Length: 376
Image 1 (cartoon, rainbow, N blue to C red):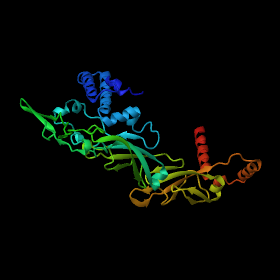
Image 2 (tube, rainbow, N blue to C red):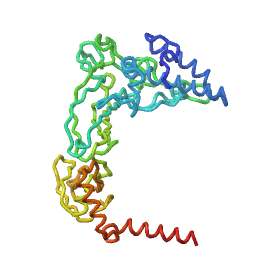
Image 3 (spheres, one colour):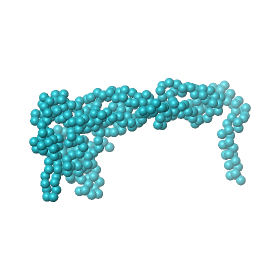
Image 4 (cartoon, helix red, strand yellow):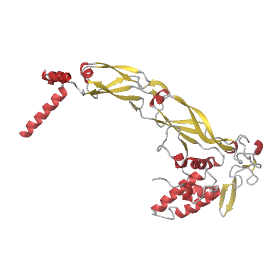
């Protein structure tokens, strides 16, 4: 089932300001809150939908990504269109913190400090790349420090000044009866500083939207779900504040021949019946792209496993390697010509079934005994 448009859910236009979006959300949240609608599943579902919509649209960067990519910008795992899908990190804020948090000690986390948001980037790699490692170049849409003001937010790079309302504390206090209520300063929004003459390029934010190119080193031995952290490569902070981090989540593409089990790899290899019966040697592929010779003893059966030590996956941050396990699959001859058929018939007439096929001979001997017992 497809998701409804976030603007439609909140009942606002795509050009709505942040204050209009916040006002529409609060009105709908109070109307559909589960505490006001006990046992109403429809109201609860509606409440979750509008909360999700507001979480995205209240943030300028997330809203920009949604306007450009729609719901796909925030999907994780499903619908991946290849390596390099970009997602914003972070979960949904508590509804009460959003509606009443500024009256209970201000906003949480980096809102007051202006720290940039952490970002997420999904990268798909092959099993061979997981074995050998790789150097990759990725392009990440993000917020970077404004070149015009050097990230200060002030025209010409002028520095912010102390907020005249809160005198730099970023908070305001009010006495109500026995309680002292503290909230974020409405003038500086908790930053403690204000811009007198905002930079025209960034509007005083100190950062602008831009696609950043980064080099990423994937070490040998990574597994599916491995997370790589690039410190300081997330979104730029507000007005020169600390930037966020970029988290790269790796997914390893399934291989056509090999199946991974931790540091070991498994491979099913078809072996001709004659080679399995008489013995011989075959060459099998390895994960590093070379070939390994495998000796097949006479009488090898389907399902038998051969172990090639040190031919498996690399181990992360270690010189060790896992092993490779080759599972024999004995191939029964097909499309036999007349002479081949005659040779097999002669082999069958030569007898010795008990010695040449002990498992099948023993099985049918037990079946015969079972049938005789049933007759008695």
